[in-house]
Amino acid sequence: MAITVSLVFLFGLVLFFLLRSKSLGYGAAFIAMMFGFYLASTGAAGPMNQLSAAVVDAIRNL
Image (tube, rainbow, N blue to C red; front, side, top):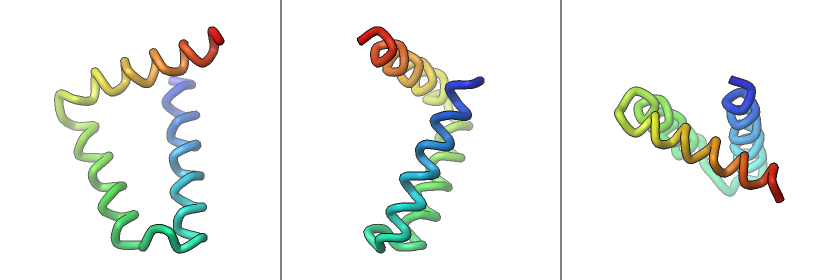
């Protein structure tokens, strides 16, 4: 749970800065956000969570 909240915050922060620097338009940001919501409801959600946890563990063990 703590990893998920941290990653949501991190991705939200990156999205905010991309929007602020006009590197990403509002339409593209909306599409990216909706893709994330729909991806979370598919069978790919489990492997994506496992991949994120593995990357966080690898970074922690460096």
